[in-house]
Image (cartoon, rainbow, N blue to C red):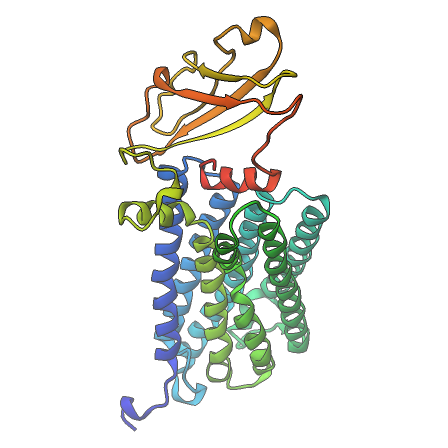
Length: 389
């Protein structure tokens, strides 16, 4: 029988591996660019996702090497050396899968924790990710030490033993269930968070899918569960190919979609440069810079109108700057009648505006009031984007 006549499903797994190796690299690369160059706020969730990418690319390397030696073939069509080597790399993929999934889920959870403020939401995230990490850790160590000695997994020409494969399957299903629960929690929470923000309905509808992108991997989780029983079949390298494919898809989607959820600043900048943003975006008439201000105001008991020039704002060294005016001109601080704190931020893609020419107009129309334009969730979401509204 010629080589072309030998059944080989390895190319199917290879295609999935190469596609997601590139997709995850691009997605995480863009994420790092956004957080380091645009937002200038590289946080724990970004570092964890980079670690997940490194583990995933290592998994891809193990999987591709296994394909070279025989993954996707019938054992009868391989030499003893090929079977042993392919099985060894399959065992390595076990470990790469569990670590990658734990890290990617932890990154998505950390991203969510940067936004949520309600205690119930915070505890929901902690419980969901804790279940996933506990189950993933158990699955990792059971996979690592399922055979004694460890090499007995791929080399049966020695004395040794392995755990009943049904235990491995049960743990795999348990981990997948916890992973699906985590995805469900991370799908529902953004809907509640975004829907309570003070923004246009159209903007909310556009934002919810972006924040829920990290949960797309749920589809792969459910499909993968159906193929886990194939782990007990004797023609292992052939029968488990579907499990391997959907494991790659699950990890690839978790990393890619979880990173896409952080790319709003890049999309907004691209839309601005392409001229897709309208005047509501905050562009001034000259079109060369934008300012966003947040204020909390306490006014006196009569109607007045003041033009306050905040010439005391120091200028930051970085292109994106955010500083506070410690006091006000016009005698307000001396009288103690009212106070105003203004936070001003210039876009990172334009030259910062000279703070000596910032003028804030405040209209007083109530006896005593405070104005706060953001909710806590809006503020956290804006900070994660590196901008204020």
